[in-house]
Image (cartoon, rainbow, N blue to C red; front, side, top):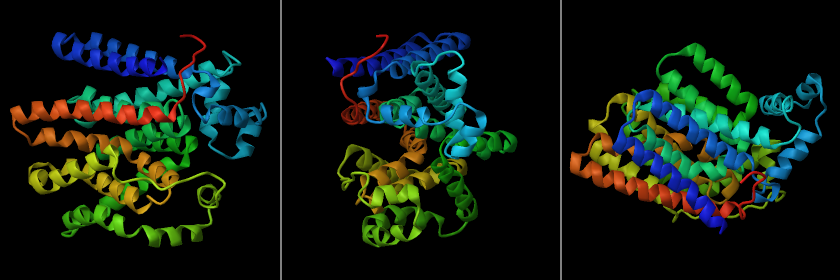
Length: 354
């Protein structure tokens, strides 16, 4: 029964997409439709009961242990922005439904904004469908703090690409205040700026995913030397980890689409799009090189994850009309597979509202 509820959510999203394609409502009605969808998705996740996901009680215990004053929030020194969102929501409600709904709404809203900005409104629903399929249950049910921070950081990269520096600084600051790991995106963008015009750029992109397969053991020996408290939790046995398989739909789809783009479509892509290949090349590298520890591997890859979904759309830029139709259908199948694979991280759905 609970699987039908989760399945019903993705079916509603698919129906929304079909309505937009075949009815083609006016722009203001489209915006209202997408806003309504975001509200529904955020209420569905925000009104869940504590045992639906594994992190809910951890978040509430952490928040409850922080004092009520602003100085208490600052003094605890960890992800201040996330706590401030709770302090704001607590003005209207002392419970957690409004808080988790608000966090989820902001996360979904900025993912929608990201999807609509990437190609200037083209393929908006298809990009969001992939993002939703892979990250909705992961971000809006489980890793809610990271989910919002990643949405903000990814959106900031779009502004950086379009040279809107003030907006970039604002969203980078917001992302960092919610979850520091999201700032990895900014570091990677800076690296991209240094190497994008180098002759070896193409060959570096080709090599990185393959190098990751062979460098795992060396990285496993190096990481403990960093001596980070946040990292050590995943290395010293305090957090249960296991090896992650590379024979998953998530890894294999990205791997084959990436090399299709590199060998078939690279010369046809405008330079602006090659940053997505850079991010996916690194994503595949991290996925393979850190595969000995699923927590570190997947959490690192997730930081880049929204751009991975954009890369999966890029073949539509170089295929003919008939091939585009077939590939678009395959993308929908892939999205459903992504969504089904993330259903295993949640328990039977229970809600205070539904």
